[in-house]
Image 1 (cartoon, one colour):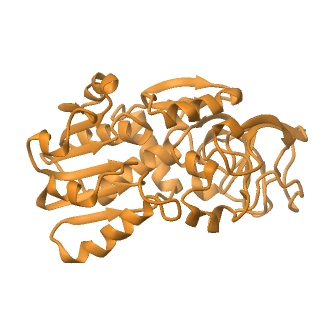
Image 2 (cartoon, one colour):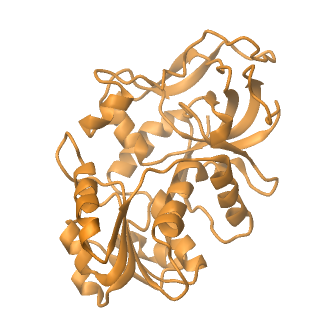
Length: 343
């Protein structure tokens, strides 16, 4: 996708006295959190099939780490080979529609929306209506801003790929992060017996979300957990495929959500490819997927949130200047749930 800071307006874009510039958290080259700066940049214009959202909240998600450093290198085919095509960080968004492209229908200026947008760690961001949904009156923008990536990824892992059912034993690895906290709650909501693995300081958090058991990943191997699982959801992990399979029932399902292992070129994709090659030769289901936000999926998650079936535990709320610190805390594994960026 092209850099959302482009300033050539599409014919038919509707303006309502909007400022020509905005503040945004961005970086100009691949690097680390230290390279993230907050500065004034041109406000983006919506393309013919896009809307402009005034951002009120934007959830931090783990994909930001890969957008920041451009790793694994194979991802740069989409992100930009030598430098990032999109300089402003952020994907999850909640806010108000303030301008429409010429071809947009079904969305109005003034609508409260949430989902994903290009470069959401900013005062304004452009988005495709197909990746947004209307925010229910009962939801705050802060809560809604955690659904577009983290919520949808967890839902696809638990429901779409894991096919978790009543009474099953489910293991969630990485249970205290943005995706993991939702995965624990969704599996519990479906009537599963959930075991969560996280760091020692977050065990009570994970139990409070519905896990019947919680273990410190530093002190426990999968063999120590005492039983085979019907479904394992491995979030941003680096365990060997054989170790994960040994903790499954003979016809259990492993759902790989990202991954931090492997070499610099393929990274966690290497393990995903191995799982795909192995899958046809085993009774176990070895699954991985790419999360795709849609209006329908966003709406489904909002209904669960409105009903109280899931809730986003918030670690911290920050302004644009806090994006760097939020990323660093995520890299250190300190977060207990979500970081909400409020421009």
